[in-house]
Length: 108
Image (cartoon, rainbow, N blue to C red; front, side, top):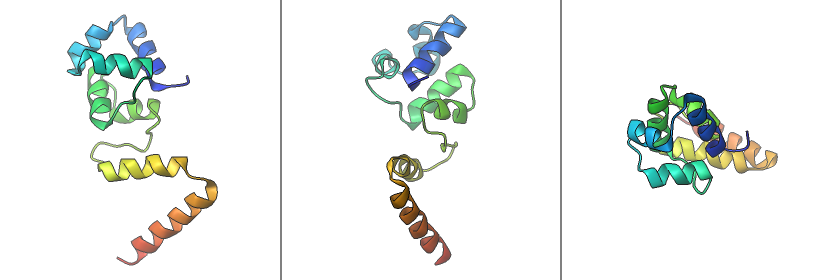
């Protein structure tokens, strides 16, 4: 599957749900869900959590489908953002970031 919108659309079809069903169950505005499903926008942490609750899935399952596999309940926005940034780095830059993080960690 190439994106979260496709995954979510397949989940709805598998359950015989409409977007209106997911809107009702998640409490997310219909235009927001429509843009997520169409791929026009991504889903943020709060949206992922509400979608997960509506689908009765652990947040991690939905986050993984959205490409945010490091997400766990309680992760700070800074940690989630750091993971997103790290995924976009080259191997050399990721090694440098890892060394910096370990240096900061060891200085505690």
